Length: 76
Image (cartoon, rainbow, N blue to C red; front, side, top):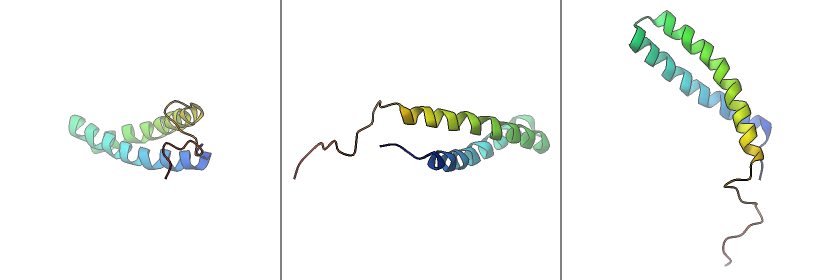
């Protein structure tokens, strides 16, 4: 079983949205300046999105922990 590339793109965007909001909130709490926190979040949004996409596509090629659709663990 393999995921299509567009699934990885959608997962990448949804995860980075959550992660970026988290980064902005943490940076705002630590630094105390919303503008700086948004700048940090904006930069990491794109860098981590690219890293996650390639990480996801690499794991899609690895068979570790996967089963084929034809592998049946039980019969009825």
